[in-house]
Image (cartoon, rainbow, N blue to C red; front, side, top):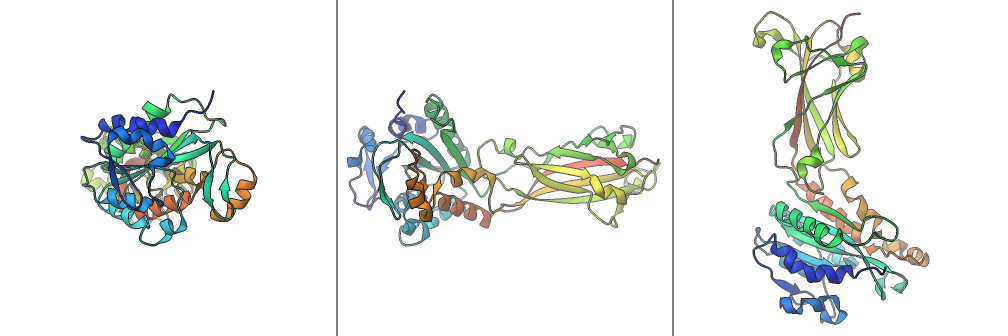
Length: 382
C-alpha cells in the first residue's frame, strides 16, 4: 500500500480540526510577506507553486503568531528545515518570538509527523541536494493556551494520524512535546508511602494520628517506604515537565505518649542525615523514606516524618524531547548521513529548536511543590 500524502491530508483537514478548538479560522501564506489565504485556496498549499516568495522565513510567521491575542490559537505547518541564520541570529531569528510567546503565559506545541516524500531535498550543508528519501517529517507548531494547544494536537492524532497505516519500520508516526513555563497549576498532592520488604505496615504504632497517616515498621533498620508521584498524569498532556526535584523533610520523635498531640511529638533537628529522598524511575519521580539513613535512628521510639517534594528545575537532556535528537540532522554530519542513502530524511537544526525551547522554559521555571507525605515509623527493638 503506498504511503499516504499525510501533509496534504492534514492541510486540507486543518480548518475543520481547528474549528473544534477555536471560534474562528484565518489562514495565511508566509514568506517575505504574510498574506491572507482564502480557505478555498488552501488545497494549493500542498503544491510547490503555492509559495510565491523566493524566501520563506519561519521567523516571520512566528513573529505574526507572537502578536496574536493570548486567547487565539496560532498554527504553523512547515518542514522546519532551518538555516543557521534563522536559528542563531539576524532579523529572522526565531528565539525572540518564541520567548515572547512563552513569557505571555502561552504554550508552544511541537508535533513532528512522518510522511511519504518524493522529490529533491535542497540546501543540505556540504551536499546541497538529495534525491533518495521516501519519507520526510514535517511539523506542526501550535501556540496558545495550554488547553487549546493540547486539544488541537490530540485531535490531529485522533482524526488524521490514527487511521494511517504503520510506518515502514514500525516506529511512531508522530512525536509531540508541549513547552510551557507553567506546566503544572495544581496544588501538591498527598502520596501514600508503601512499605518495601522487610518494612511492613504497623497499624498500631500511632493510631491517634488517624487512618490517613501511613504507619510502618522497619525491622532491623531495613527496608523502604516509597511512592510514585504521578506527575505525567497530572499534566494530562505530552508536556515538558521539570525533572529535577528536591525534598524537604521534618522529623518528630514521640516524647510523651499520653500527652495531647501538640505536646506528644518533639521536633528533631539533629539527625545526621536525611531520611527522605526523591529520584526518577521510568520518567516519574519516586519519593523514598528509609534505606541506610535508618541505621542512625534509635530503635523502640515512634517517629513522624513529613516530606515535601518540589519540582525545582529542568535537566540538560530531558526525556520528553529525546525524539528531537533522533530526528535531528547535524550540519557537520550531513555528508556522512546522506552517504548512507537513508529513506527517512532527518530535519536540519531540529535539535537546536528543541534546545532553544528547553532553555526558554528553564530560564523562568519556578520551583513548585508537587507532593507531600506523612509517615509514622519505628525501628522495633530486637
